[in-house]
Amino acid sequence: QVQVVESGGGWVQTGGSLRLSCVVSGLTFGSGTMGWFRQAPGKEREPVAGIRWRDGMSYYANSAKGRFTISKDNAKNTVHLQMTSLRPEDTAVYFCNADGRLSSWPFNYYAGDYWGQGTQVTVSS
Image (cartoon, rainbow, N blue to C red; front, side, top):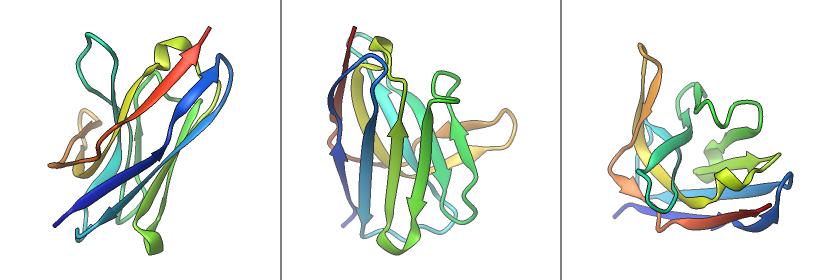
């Protein structure tokens, strides 16, 4: 049974930083991609950042580039998302996803079947 467990998140003021972590168990990673999606109230879920397990190739949404950094720890089956310079528009529920994929052209990140429960990130102005 695959389990996706997130930690981190919370409340921060504009310009602040937060770190999200996600541990996955019960899954053979192979060439899959792990990462984060987010969903704000009234909006669709969107990809934020993903990292391919076998080679570390990373994807960032335009809104995340230059501010967020995704990293992985192969030994611990863990992915981290370091978020800096946070803005009120980053407020959303952030979901960890496992076994997704990166497409070559256009370069994009597609979710896999396994989701965490979500963690709230709130950025106040």
